Image (cartoon, rainbow, N blue to C red; front, side, top):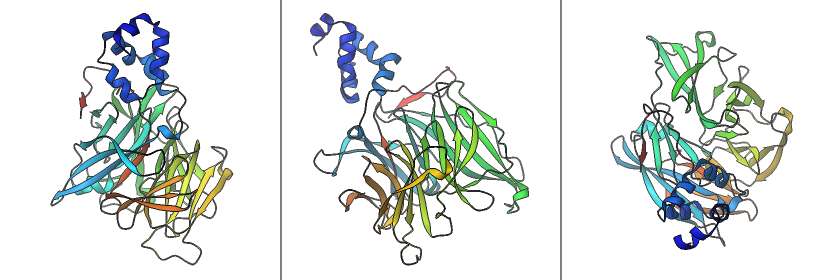
Amino acid sequence: MSYGIMKKLHEDVVMQILLELPVKSLIRFKSISKILYTLIHSSIFINLHRNRRRNTKDELLILKRPIFLDENLYKNIMYFLSSNDNDDTLKHVSPEIDVPYFENDFCVQFQQLIGSSHGLIALTDYEEIIFLNPTTRKYRLLPHSPFRCPKDFVFVPRGVGFGYDSIEKDYKVVRFYELSSEPYDRDLEARHSRVEVYDFCTDTWRWIIPTVKLLPRVHHYVGSEAFFSGACHWTAQDDDAEPIVLCFHLTCESFRNIKLPDICYFCDNKGYGLTVCQNSLTLICYPHPKCHLEPGQEFTDIWFIKEYGEDESWIKKYTIRPLPIESSFAIWKDHILLFQTGTGTLSSYDIHSDQINEFGYQANNGTLRLVVYNEALTIIPRESNEATQVLNY
C-alpha cells in the first residue's frame, strides 16, 4: 500500500485492511507515514487486531534453551518457531533472543516461562521477573517486591502466575511462598503461606491474605502452570495429600481447588502438566521415564474439563501409547503434544497420526521451556515515570 493510495482511502477502510495483516507486516508499515504509525500504535487498533478471529495456524512456539558457558554459568536463548503448512517441521520465524539476567544454574533449573496473555509472556526464577512482548522485542524487568523474609525464617517458593484481569483491565503477577522458622520445619502448624500480587496499573506489589493459613503444596513439574478463564492454575495437593488443581482468580483475588480425576494421585510415579486445548483446561498425565511402573500404567492420558469449575466434569479425551516424556509442555494445533524426552530432546507426538517427531533442540533434562504463542502488538504497561524502563532486545 503506497502512501498516495492510502491518503485516498477512508480511515475505516484502511483500518479494516490493516486488521487482516500479520503483526510483522504491521511493524514494517509503521515506518511508511506518521498517520499509519499513529493508527497502528493506537489502543483501539491494537485491541481490535488482538481480538480478531484466530485459528491454530496463527500459533507460534517460543522455546527457551539454556546453553552452558562455564562452571555454573549459562546463557538462555529464546527461539521463535512455526511449522510448514504441509508438515510439522519447525522453522525459525524471527531472530532468536539472548535472555538477560537468568544465567546461573539455579535459574536454569527453576526458571518458569509463563503466558501468553494478549501476546505477552513472563519469565521468572521467583526473584527476577521479566515481562516481554516477543513480537515487538520489548521487555521490562519488574521491580523487586519490598517484602523480605523475616529474620530466623525460611522462605520456600511455591507458585508464580501471570495473566490479564479482564474486569479491572489490568495485567497481574501472583506469587506465593511458605514461611517457616529456621531450619525448615516440617510441622504444618509452624508454617504459613504468604501471597503477593503485582498490579501493572499501580506498579506496586501488595500482600493478599489467604483464607487458609497454609495453601496447598504446588508441585513443580515443568509445564504444570496454566492461565485460563481469568485464573492461574497449578497442580498441587491438599492437606490430605489429595491431588488438586489450585486456582487463583485474578479479579476476586481468591484461591479455590479443583479436584483431579479419581485415578490421579501423586505417588503413582507420574508427572502432571496443565495446558489449554480446544478452549478447555487440560491435564496431561504421563509416566516418568526414570520411575518403575506397573504393567498398564505406562500410557499417557489427556483429560479435558467439560464444565469449568465443576470438579466432576473431567473427561479422558485421549490415551496415548508409551512415550519417552521427561516433561510435557503443551498441545499445539489441538493435536500435537510437545514434550522434552528423557535424553533432553524437544519432541512431538501427533495424536491423529500416531507419529513421533524429534527436533534439533536439546538441553539438560528438565531445562527446556516452551509456550504456545499468538503474536500481538500489545504495549508493555508502564503507568508511571518511576516504573522500570521498557527496553529493546
